[in-house]
Length: 326
Image (cartoon, rainbow, N blue to C red; front, top):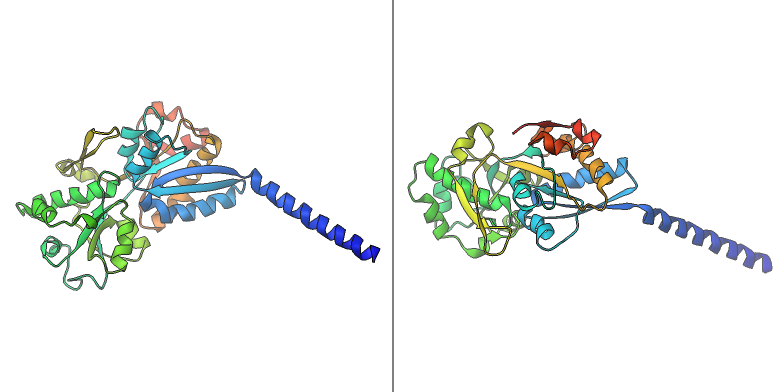
């Protein structure tokens, strides 16, 4: 009986030690906090898994939403993050540099598309040429994300302005907005996906990568209006959308330009070393950039940075993965 009790005590001790060691190992993991655009959620899920496999001592914790909203969580609400990735690199320039960040690495592009499902009204009739007429029909619902919170939102409005000029449809932009319902404007562009699939909306403006990742049907737009061709920036710049500024009561005029994603490390990053490791993994052609390419989001290889001054803030590893270009 004493021997059995002894074995039980030994067994309990072993279990306790194993649990203690497991807790200790988990506690040793360093948390890396990333705020990022909602359109990066699917590729960043894959990139996170690959990164944590390569660096098992790091636990990546991500929060995603409209890029402007994510930046303002840092600049206005004092939320802590190590990394911020935006669907529009200009959000970082206007909201975080120079007070909260020193660098802005441009790493990918995209283009706008009009998403729909088999259940959308006129799904069997819509084309790359007639979509403006379809959206104007009184029985059609269409949506986009909040321009004040999400770059996809102000880019959606830019597409409509450019379409009016490209198709020479005087008054198209104002006519379409006049029949817009407030519930069709959502805080995040990814929320529109659920509405499409639930048959609560016929059409929604999204990035091509989001459409591909969520297996949505989409209308591919003319390059002159899809914001995906850098050679057409002069025409894109004719589209302008006024949004709220970084301070209450302020406004900013966003000018059209080819879609460019940006990423930065915050000045007060609590885990800067591991943040640099994540950026190095993201910007490697055989790692993060390959994942983006597979998911319909063309990367820049190498990634781009605006000035030699910014390069001075980069780790040696990151310097090998970027080029200085306007």
